[in-house]
Length: 280
Image (cartoon, rainbow, N blue to C red; front, side, top):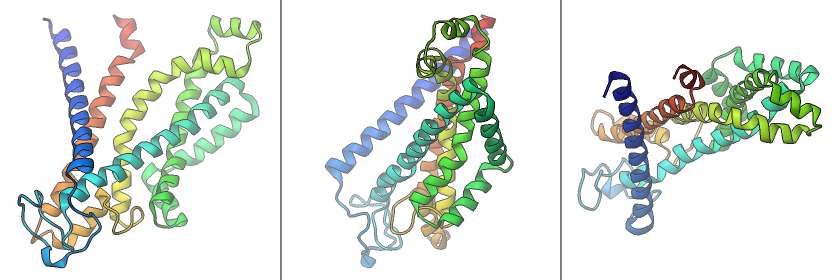
């Protein structure tokens, strides 16, 4: 096996390991929630506050006596689930807008470019913080802010791909045959854009999860007693010196999910790399 083939094998191996770990984690969460769940994640029990690990509480309890493992597992639904929801909404808005802008051009394209330039003038995190602050604290407003920040990237990606593809002969043939804009977008342009969007989305998921956790940590996202990972970090901050594990567990959960997202993004980037296929 030469060096290039060995490198490809290692990338695919790590991608499958990441996928297997993600599926195992999701299955464990489902089994725990539906079959083993014994604790109310919102129930306050001050008599059992800050307990160490035990058979009844595998990861101990927090400062209000709530089971940490239960809140950690259910928190994945808020952190990862809302992250996926925001990502899908951003793709659903940005993808058709970018396809239409690149295909039609003219006033629509110029208007889109001005809007995109306005959003891209500042870092995503700064814009999301400002929008969340203006809209008010809460997960719904945070998701809206993230979607408003992220849709531009997918629209620009789709637009740049369309501008490249529309000069090719098959697009000219489609125009001569009188295909409608919808059919051209669906049959000819979307297959070329889908791979690039998948790569960007898989890499963006980790960034969105970090953004949700960070803004929840400073009080702009999930509000108590919601068991979101960033909010759990904020709740555990006053007890860091006495019980550091309260911050360790949600922090490790965030790191693992972001690493899995990045590994998946690298795998899809190699899988859909057009230039790499040409070089072969």
